[in-house]
Every structure is written in C-alpha cells, then in structure tokens.
Amino acid sequence: MREILGRRRKLRSRRTRGSAPAACPDLTHPIDQPDQPDEPDLTGVAVAAVHRHWPVVPGARSDPAGPTGCGCPDPECALPGDHPADPGLLAATTDERMVRWWWGERPAAPVLLATGRGASAVSLPAVAAARALAALDRAGVATGPVLATRDRWALLVAPYSLPRLGELLYAKDHVPGSLRFHGEGGYLLLPPSAKDAGRVRWERPPAETPGGPALPEIGAVLDALVDTLNETGVNATDL
Image (tube, rainbow, N blue to C red; front, side, top):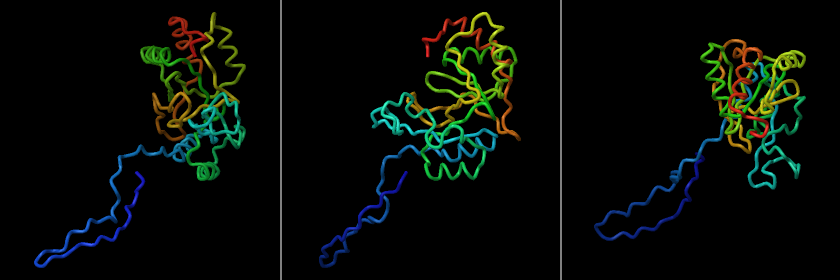
C-alpha cells in the first residue's frame, strides 16, 4: 500500500492554570487507508520465464478506460491487452538484460511468451480442458504447466514442427475447431498478466527444475484433448 503522509498542522492549545497542555495528535504518521491490491511483479515473471529458456516480449497493457479496452494506439484493436506491442513478437528473447530493461521502462506491461522455441502449447475451452486433464491423470500421462483464463486453458508442450503436427492431425477422424495450436509465430500471456477476459493464472504451475520444467510431447496429450472435445460436443462456436 502506498503511504500517504498526513499534512502537518500547527495546532494551538490553550493552557489554563494547573492544567496540562492539550495533547497534539501526531500527524506525521501515515493516515490509515484501506489496503489496496499489490501490483503484480511482472518483471519477476519475465525474468523467471527467461530462466526457463522461454523467450518473452512485452505486450500491450489493458486499458478499461480506452475506446477498445487496450492501451495500444490502434482505434480498432480486436485483442485488448492480448497482443505484442513495441517491440514486436520477433524480438522475443531469453536475454535477461534486455528483459530487465524492457520491464524497467514498462513495469506494467503484460508478459508474452513467444511459442515455438522454448515451449509450444495447445489450448481448448476451460470445461473440456478440465475433463481432459482428469483423463490424462487417470491414464498416468504426465502433463506440463497449464495456463488458464476464465474461458480457455492452454497446456504447454515441447516445441513441435508443423509437419509433425500435420501428421498427428491427419490421423484423426475429426479434430474439433475449438482446439487451437500455439507454435512458431504464436504467443501466450503468462500469469498474472491481465487481458479482456481477466487475469491469466496457473492451473498447474511450472515445476522449477534445472533447465526448466519438463514439457510433454504434443502427441502424448493430443488424443485425450481431441477425445474429450468430441465427447463433450464442444465445437468452434464454443470459443
């Protein structure tokens, strides 16, 4: 909570014979204010990502007071608080000095993970994702970190190539349109960055191990995700 110092005031106290001076309140102490939520340490989030070998770049900050809800200059922004700003996504790096400089200049900037290098991801609607994770747990399949917003969850996986992904999808009879893939050229917000759908959080936080958290191959989790979506009937219109 930011301290707000009270104003010093000169108070005159009348003394009467035989009476002690009137007590003067100590107005040099901070005035009690309701506790305010602490701003998240996004610099620390960005540096932690670098230590996991995940390239990051600052994003455009949400601005509820703006016409589009985004702090970027685009008057027709369709992804308020959920896209790269300046520099662009291609500048994403694991250089800790650069990352500290970026967030030193813009400490409130969301942290964007550039997928396809240190980590990729596959995302799906939240309800189906919770069921899919439960199915993976029952099958004894190890999962990596899981990002969550109010609407969607994203399972982080090891980087995959487009030919490899194409082979896996070609083998499926039906791939629901609500399944999304975040590979080379994509990005995800890292917790606790905020977007129009609320703050991003860890449903399953990354294990801090040497060399970064273990990430499963996409083929190890894809079957459970596709099967769960097909069973629940979640399609492209459901986010």
